[in-house]
Length: 149
Ligand SMILES: [Fe+2]
Image 1 (cartoon, protein in one colour):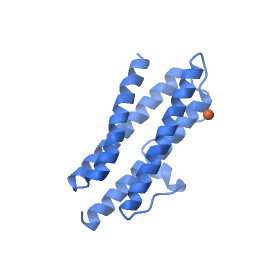
Image 2 (tube, rainbow, N blue to C red):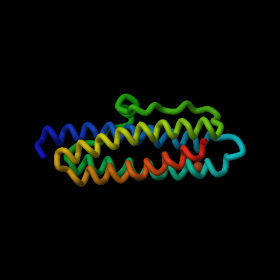
Image 3 (cartoon, rainbow, N blue to C red):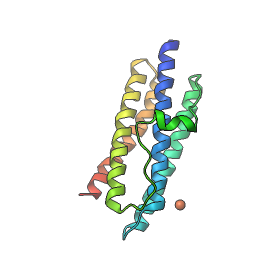
Image 4 (cartoon, rainbow, N blue to C red):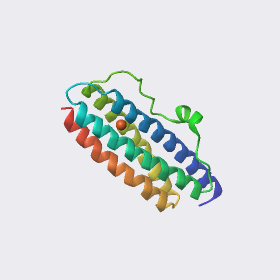
């Protein structure tokens, strides 16, 4: 891997890190602000998602360091992330789930592209790490879409 490929990959991973940070915060927003008869199961589901997001966040940042880069910091996340932060207000179950599906689909596309780029430059470790999350998201999207039918 040449330096320019590595620098490009670190830039993509910092965008992925920022998307992950905003998405994880959105999972907290729905965890806190969900209302209605599905409060208890969805409050728990969103906790599962922010815990998974926190784990991914750490994995991505540590991979950036392994590649010689530095993880982006908080003030950069909103501009680097294609996922927009959720408004803090009450959410019924359908709105929270539909928003989550949209965020997960964006993340799935973005992570797929990063994994493919890593693979194209011969970095199977990054491709594998990011690819694992693509598989996780794909399964969650399937379940979330089943839940809103
Ligand atoms: Fe909580």
